[in-house]
Length: 146
Image 1 (tube, rainbow, N blue to C red):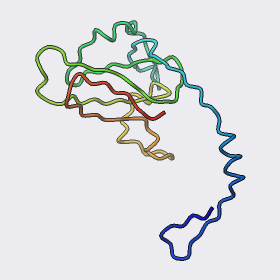
Image 2: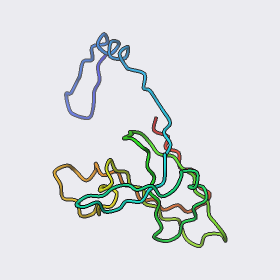
Image 3: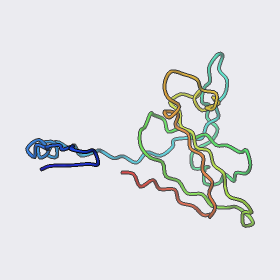
């Protein structure tokens, strides 16, 4: 099969046998839903930080948050994947979009560090941080990338 693009005189020949072999070797991904184990606070611990138990995860559904409030969830392990959550308004209808910052870290210090001041060796794109402006509540965040 010949593939061409916008480069003049460009032609690439694809070996169909290699393509079939590669397709046959695609592994089936193992998917596991992981939920937070507890609600914690991040506290100084000498020159470092530690996660300290605050409350059982069942209390999460009862937490009402406003400006500058935060909640730290401990998943109990290192995980890779996508996050999903649901938020709703409390009390009277909201008069402004919900502004949410989601940050993931492998160790507690990564949660409390100011990501904007990071000047390390790896790219800032590796910092797992997201800022959301949500106009309509309730809101279901379900990442469709699977």
